[in-house]
Length: 114
Image (cartoon, rainbow, N blue to C red; front, side):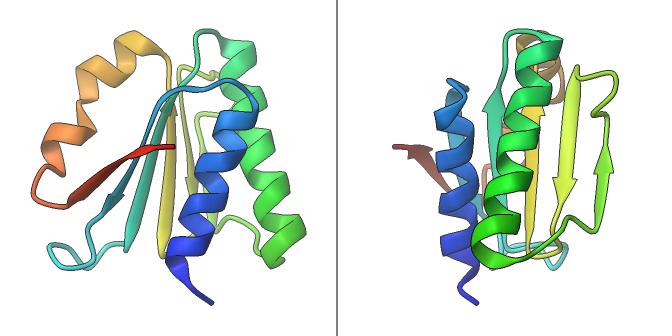
């Protein structure tokens, strides 16, 4: 399986639910924890949950992969889907700004979707 294809599908799933400022960061050369990080923004609890569900469903349908773990879905201020080689983070704006993962992983290859 090509991890980049899974990351792109996750970004597309975020986009299908009108997520804002979708980023893909390839960190496989600078970290061993994962290969790809997808970061997206939802404007409400409902949208964060909807984006998370869209990502989970699309990856399950296309690649038959379930997340290894999920965090924050109920609170929906920041949701995380961990697929091992891919980690998807969906933030509400104030949480995205606070955690600033784009800066933290700034030494990775950062791509804006689309």
